[in-house]
Image (tube, rainbow, N blue to C red; front, side, top):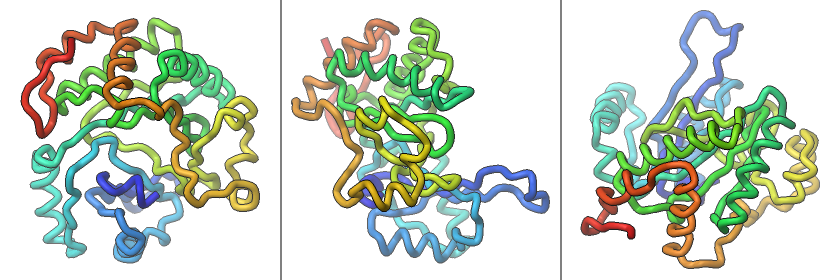
Length: 273
């Protein structure tokens, strides 16, 4: 968990619950979690454990630096406004592509996931598959393996790609409702609704059942230490993976509309032929 948060925003979001009628669900953004002590400080300062419906998330945007925000409510509120009004863009380094498969049933989501995963395997796209914590899956391609475009271009490209995948390949469980630069995703290995947000290997995907993500089973049967996100197809250069991703995307969108004017972060303006 901590490794993934090295250059990401840690977020706490409370799931709406009909029994809570006297306040709004808790939303805590702009947290740092790149050390265990920082994670503990956030838990203690915001009394996270007092709210059983709070889940942990991380930002899909990668940052060269996630600043430390004060725990003082007044100071934090001012910093939060400045950050959300655009300061975060100064620290942008990349944006991760995440497809959220959320079907009527877990089996529907799994079948749709396998359709896209087969395509990723065909093009050798580096990716991870993660149980979402409820009744779906996340298919994630880290920003390192994607075209290094400006924030606006890559978010637009990936949002359009998700929508066209859903339409052209008839994959109804893809949730394409939210694609923006501040989008967040459930934090792998966190606890959600009595289950673990668990990265899955191919055997677990093909034979998935809810028992696999129960905390008792995970602790007893899975070696968590250094397990990571179980990325596939990482034995290649980043440029090779980026070109493969563009070739895949050309099946669904006009790639040139996004990449020819895209600006690579921290570098000169470039074009991808």
